[in-house]
Length: 267
Image 1 (spheres, one colour):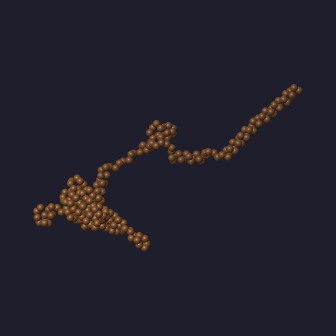
Image 2: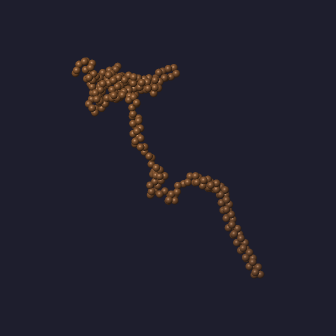
Image 3: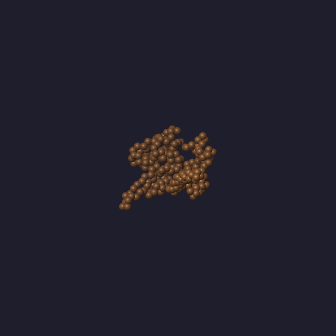
């Protein structure tokens, strides 16, 4: 009898243990289900395909490795922002062109033509003609040509394009070149030229004075080969009239020997 009572007492204890184990196991299953659902609801961060693509990208464009394990070393130059990186420092510096080549280019550009005549464009004017279909534009170019040795001329060319107008003016200026009497680097005496309403006065100057003249007059004086002169213009500021008045003034210059020959006397 006492043995049966003991068995009956042990049986309910085992039942209690089994029920407690079942209760403990149930929450674990519930948590596993939640984990599965969470995995189903949220996509994985990196699948095998994504990892393979990342590996390929690393092989194509490898990331720079540093001695500090990927971190920037700010103690060395080029480690922070705004400074040159190590790659830039490894680049070879740009080679500067040789100065001898520069000087040769400049001399080639500044060389005078084979005939020794230089030409200067003084003014380019645009003219518009109104027609039935709109406006037609034409250009006129004022050019001064000279050999810088006492001969100078002026030309006025007109054409639908600038380049052709300049070419025409250069040809005309070379054809109309006139001799100019000079004494050293200046003119022999004071003179005055008039053309239309333009008046140009030329005065001789001592050596070292330079060319004291405006744009149109300066172009004529330089082409004639004068280095020291004083000038003054009156009246209009039209460059065409001023240039032609300057030419008239230079044509009226005479040296002492020329005057003696003209008069037939000795001065």
